[in-house]
Image 1 (cartoon, rainbow over the protein chains, first blue to last red):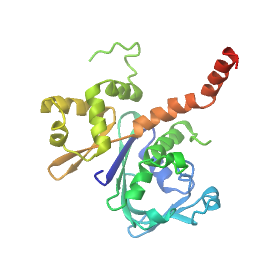
Image 2 (cartoon, each protein chain N blue to C red; image 1 turned 45 degrees about the horizontal axis):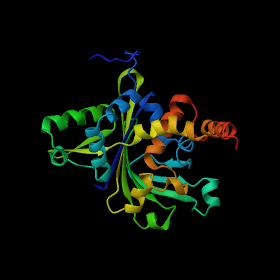
Image 3 (cartoon, each protein chain N blue to C red; image 1 turned 30 degrees about the vertical axis):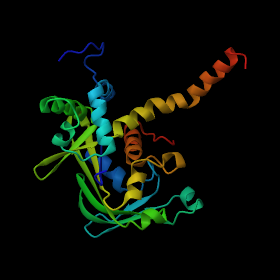
Image 4 (spheres, rainbow over the protein chains, first blue to last red; image 1 turned 120 degrees about the horizontal axis):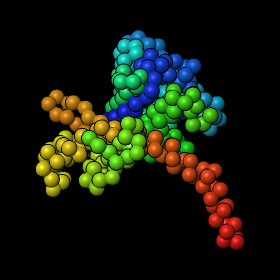
Length: 160
Length: 115
């Protein structure tokens, strides 16, 4: 492992719609881990990923992910720190760096690239690579982005 | 470029993924990146009995299928395995067969076999 994971997905949607699906709490709890995430989109602004009722019922803290905005250039580039608090093992690894890049292409298709710099966070790296999916911990970034694509293109996420 | 496919116009993302995977060298390159990604062309080339140009051609096919994503790091170009297209195939096809449909087939098999 190089310590960095890169995921790229092509979605038939405008950069603005995808940006909204990532940054607006009305959208970002409708796919993937389905936790409502609040982002204060200015440098130094807070990121708070709230656990959903199912996660809290299984012992997760109220704030499951926290971080800070480093750059927010709507609708093309979002850089933030990211710490997973769901599990003591990932919480202890501290903050990692996460970058979303959106690029409009041909025929209304936008590419979304997620770069997660995970050096020093081996537990989180395994979680985001989907290694704990069979334990019910979700399929990581590939799963999240595949679900996001499905939601934006068909109006339905996998759990709908 | 010509394709044998009856649907020449509509070469979609899945077609590119399956074509990219239908080659042992390209699958081997993906295995290498799965074991450790962020590798340069030179590092990948050293694992294969093939010219640099040949490896570049295979990496290009993998990039076009979105199975490999590259990133510049100074003068180096690093290659990363992108699992999202395989995940999409999993979500679209495998889930379908492991869900209700597979259940129905198993039921039929039991019925036919008199269990």
